[in-house]
Image 1: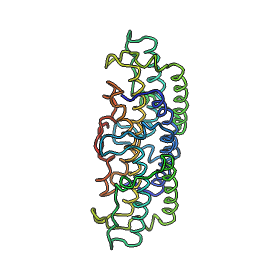
Image 2: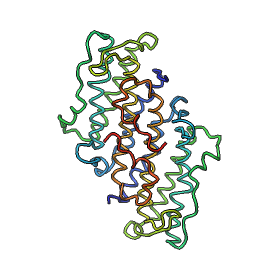
Image 3: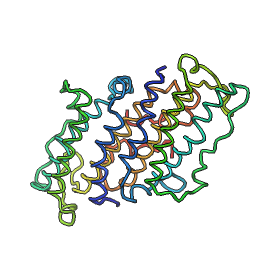
Image 4: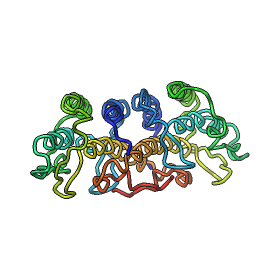
Length: 178
Length: 178
């Protein structure tokens, strides 16, 4: 086990700004391409990250602190951002992710005393008992999985353009979570 | 086929700064972890990206412009950074990547006239005939594949920490290019 609050927070703090640097100002070709029907483009991934900030990570953490295992987490719709299309520009979405993440990290630091809280448990509707440290670890890896998805979606766009080099490009061999 | 110079350059320009934002100041735990024996940590990935800037992309592009298919590309050692350990700090490596990439993009823009040069061909020692546009597309996807590697290596560190959530985290299912 490697989780600790300081290192986890380091990643959570960096993700939105890094994605803003990488994605802001990119041509629509990069932002609107996807991996085929039913898959997300880069803009939809950012919407999903915003949704997680609002309805998943902090709410579940507060639920554990308040309810423990007495009640299961309220359900969370992982596809809600797809059903509730918004009219925000892509730059506005990046800014919203950055803003809401910053607020959540401030709340996280105020709420959690690592020595006291990391072993608290909650009840996941599917998994049963889960630890608060597992929820926080998952928040971090969820960032990493969606950064990975973003670059994979973009790489897919050049699948034929790279010609014979695709043999050397591991990212074009991966389709594990399409 | 989707390649065009403007969009490709957008990605090449953003990678070093984005990685600097994401990685600069991270704890050593994140920078020195890897996926097991014989795999690279984050710092080694940055060394590999620097190596590519110096010995792979621009040199091969210039070779195509000068030699066409008359001679195969000089060999390029993809593992040279592993054999030539340097004493630079991690922050110095990030800065070097940013600096050398910036110089290379300036050269790229000076050397290449898309209407004239994209269909020029060279001779790859393994693949045979390759197009200049394929080399440039590969440069872009190579950035994306190593960003993907960096976040995958980091995610691996929390494999057990996430508990039952690993079912939902695609990044922990991928081991295609270890």
